[in-house]
Image (spheres, rainbow, N blue to C red):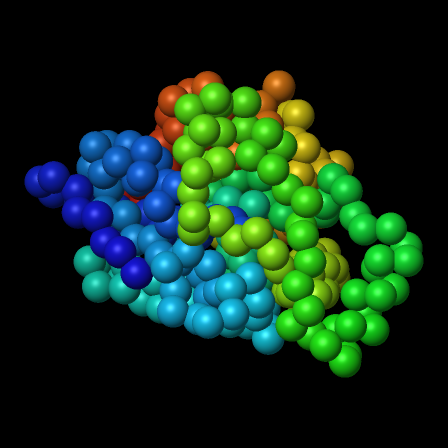
Length: 267
């Protein structure tokens, strides 16, 4: 877990939850933007990814391992005695959703960035059946997720960095995949259990990794009394890495600062 301190008096704390296969280091730009805007930032690497010490990378026994990690990050954010926001990208968004469906947290709001609520491409029926069998007899069997930097962003600088990033997970276990698919289903099945919390959901309009149709469907059904949906036409999956990312950040910043004004904080 890492903590970045805003210069001077901070307005709130942003907890960033990264997505599948990646790590916290890919959020340096976004973290700096929040820090420069007057916010503390808490972020870390999820179990089996990035710089975590787990020997078997790309594997989890249960999706709950991710929830446990993010709970600890939120607990760290509370130490500042400031409003706390969670920003979850892709699988990180799914983690935030599942956490808020299982229990209530003292959060000022949540930002979901292209949340993983449906995949743009699923394995064939044969591979899917094989994954269910392997999940029982050989859950650590690893496969290629078949995701590339070109599918994630149009930003050439980010793509170049990703091609040489040794911390990327290149193989995932069948247990990891089955837990992901199961959690997506749970996110829909337990929509009524979602904590009533202000939500900003931003989705890439030309996402090659997440299917935006179930994302919009999930958003339409949630019962939160304050919710905002913003689709960014032409943007790929990683909206905070796209060439238009400054506009994306300013939109998210506007959501956060409006929430702080509503809560009685002077911005």
